[in-house]
Image (cartoon, rainbow over all chains, first blue to last red; front, side):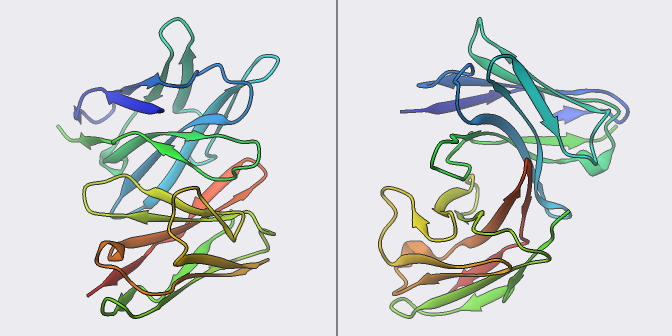
Length: 123
Length: 106
């Protein structure tokens, strides 16, 4: 059974960096198919895909164009974790952040979701 | 960016009735369309992918259809646990977008 356990602060001050971690059990961050993603949800923006990382012959990442320059998603192969960093946050970055698996192969959807971390950006 | 529009915003039905939810894309996404169910306080759950393929373990009363720009999720006979919000999601190349959701309530 694949489980994703998320951790990180629930309150971040404006202009600071939001940092979240996702611990993966039952699967590997280094899987050679599919991708590991971060998705957030807020009343104003709905569900918004933020970015992904994946391993093929090397590590790759892709990010939502609206966030490029502020976001970084990194794997930690030693601890089998995934991290998200979002810099220069504003109140518009408030929402629930999910760590999510896209298994690839023949299953074209986000099949495993973490429980979500509620993040509020406020001074 | 491909925009997904869902209708109706809210569907008020009773258990046993059937539900028909629509998702329209601003341009063709082929069959790269998935449906999710979300209940309060929970993460979304994948129901359908590839427009019509049901995830293992999802009841047969859930079915998806469509291609190109117009897609439908049908719930043939609503069970009490089906009252929730449903989202569609598309993938084109490596970019993903979600629809705003349809709430199915009693």
